[in-house]
Image (cartoon, rainbow over all chains, first blue to last red; front, side, top):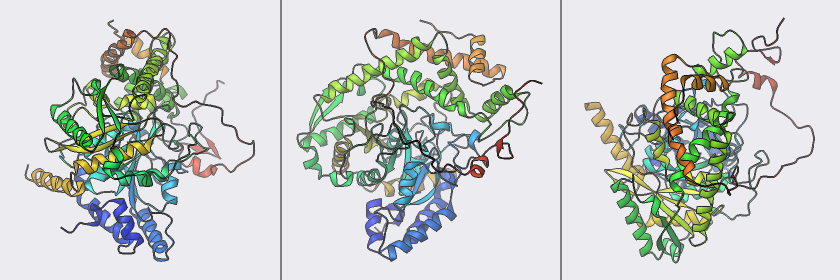
Length: 504
Length: 98
């Protein structure tokens, strides 16, 4: 079978580009053709930048031809979640309130990708201000899961996940506050990583909950994830929570499957394998863990006893931080301003009432309430104390185990519209990813199988700043499960869905 | 513990948050927020009397730099995003009396 360029991985394309077997312009046209073919159905992007991408690809091609590529990512087309500030390119954060905002500067992670020579295709769709688990809270339109167009891609980085799955980008960046990279990666059959809090600079990432937000890559495979991570993990003086770490190359840390997991102690929290987990998801997760065991990993049950309280703590802490961060949208310095108002306060209130969607308002209200006089101790302080208990659970398990494994999401991709009217049911979609943000740990979701024809993700959680071990075990999982070329499989499912859609 | 918000509380919080709702929205938020607050009451099942809060997962320290002038963003580019700007300033409704 001859593959299209957009069906290859970053590391494969990087070789072809460096060996001059493929040109950067040729690669861009292949991906652009794919976008034109499927974007109407999938709707991964809020903003596309054909001129910018063509200019960047031409520059990459010039440097490749003259034998002076800037990095191994030279000429690789990528998409960026619309929460990341891009100089001169509209950045909406999925919100009507920022529908005309053009940042005057680049986020540090974006600048790193530009300096590496990547070609930025556009800005991917997301739940408004990254608040949601289905991409249906986008202020513009919902994104569809390319594996089944009647289902959600997950969220909030839904467009970043669907673009990689459908071949509309070679890789993307997303952001993860409670699972927003890992959950859509799981639902779209791609690899998604949330690095340790502090590993990637948050400068230029539009803030949702500052003590939880992290930028992370979504990629076709684990090797690509390691490659991208190598460019975005670095200390940045512009983010005072950015941590200076000594590290080697993540890519070079990858090892053959058996070598990577022999003797590795994997803890499987019993709290992650019980109630609420779809049987199809449970079966695939168990099967993958058995394969790792056959490769020499020691897989044992462990316990994170406070897991069930993580969701409650999160839905106090994240909205509290959001209510404060989103106070800046007041119709003065940027974004939308209401057309009719009586005075300054009325202008603020109408601007925000007209500019924000319902989920954002819900969280601002929740956060404002939790921080208001008389409730601070009962809600916010209490939640931050429970957060300590959740962290201590992880510390205890990591005294005995190298990594933790379990499902990324309790279900496969659900139907569009299924949970929009029930905020609590939607929140439960992130039940296994949220504790990781509360503890600031790294987590990765890697495809491990299919249930009802839809991808299932296996999540690994690691010790702080131990991304290398996570990448190794995820790489071993990928080899052991050998699901085939996911881009090809997804394209087949999408072609079938498009045909059925046309008939229906 | 049943935690039901009143409409008056919803209006009060909306004022604090600089939001404003239509009557039907007030009722919707009252119901939804009450349900979520009920759910998070579960946190009270845990004894945290001897637990320190975690506000941040990494040890935070003050980050200092030299107090030197550095280039900042070009004023015109920044003001280009403002809904209303005039003469190099953001323009807002009148905020003082008289």
